[in-house]
Length: 182
Image 1 (cartoon, rainbow, N blue to C red):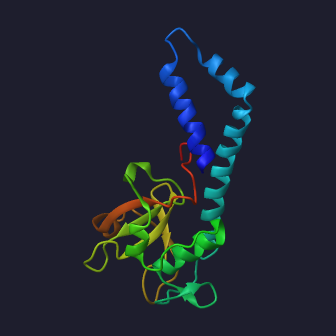
Image 2 (image 1 turned 90 degrees about the vertical axis):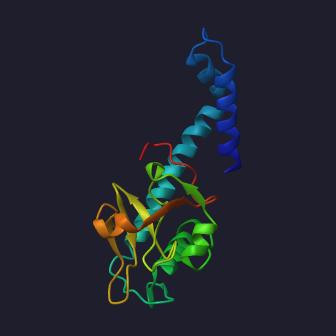
Image 3 (image 1 turned 180 degrees about the vertical axis):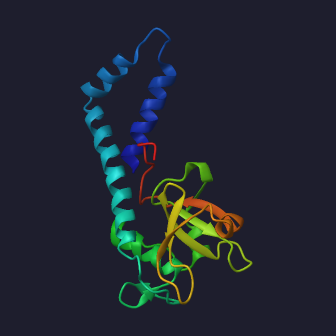
């Protein structure tokens, strides 16, 4: 993550100091000479792989029954237990147990910035951040909805979820920013 920030900072500084007459080819040559061009490509591929891995792992929970306080495939999951289990299994990060704690521990992002693997929060119990799911792309999220239901994918555009949308968050240290445009 620090390397990604360093490379991004170097790119921004170099771009800001480049004179209008210099082309991007000089920057590419500089990055290539320093061995950074290949590393940037590796970071991009790694980001896409981790986001895909996280979403695929989450899809493996489809059909797992909701269980209040649950956090495993064997016993069932609730919304925050599901998110906690996916992040721990996929990227080795241990998130807080409750949805509102997960919101507090992650970076606020605009809904327009959502990328697969980001967290989406909803007000389903007349309090902020009372429900959480994982954004999978294309306006959809995967979550453990309620007692009697199973982990499933739903559209955030459905009236029920659209009215209750409480915000989006990005887990820092888990998935770096996706540069693929998804």
